[in-house]
Image (spheres, rainbow, N blue to C red):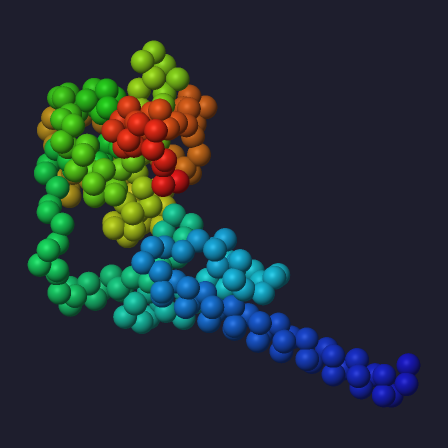
Length: 238
C-alpha cells in the first residue's frame, strides 16, 4: 500500500467516528423535540421512525436522561415511553391548578390499590378482597381519571370483565413500571389500605405488560357496547 493510500485509510478511520457522533447528536435533538412537543409519553418506536436508521434509540434516551438528571425538569421513562417531568425535589414550587382534579375517596383509593397490585382483577375479586360491595360510581371515577381500564374477559362462567391500570396511572404517580409500586407497609402508611381489607391482603408481583393472560379474551366491539363505552354499531377510537 502506498503512502497516499495509508493517509487516506487513516483519514477514513478518523472521519467515521465523527460522522457517527454527529448522527447520534442529531438523533438526540430530534428525540428531545418530539418528547418536549408531546402531551403524552413518547415511545421509542415512534422516535425510531423519525431518526436515521441504525441509531440505538435506547442509548440516545439514556444519554438524554443523564443530561437532564440535574436540571429543573427530568426526562423520565413511563411504561417504556418517555416524558419530561418537573424534578421531584422541585414539585413544591409549582403552583397547584385551582381546577385540580378532585381527590379520590378512601373507597376509590382502596379499589385502585387492589387493581394495581392484583391486575388483571374482576369486580367480584375486588369485593372479595375488600369485604364490601364496590359501587359502579367508584369504578366510574377511576375510569374517568384515566387510571383504570377494562383489559379483557375472563374465561370463566359469566365471562367477567377484568380491570387493570393504565400508562396515565404510572405517569401520575411517578412510576416507570409496575414493579416500582411500593410495598405493603408503604401502602398502609399512605392510608391506601383500610381495616376493611383482610390482614392477609398480599402484594403479589403485578403484571409486567399489557398482554392478555392465558385466561383472558380481548374486549370486542360487542363488549364495548354492552359496557356502555360504544354506541351500538359505532366504531372504537382504537
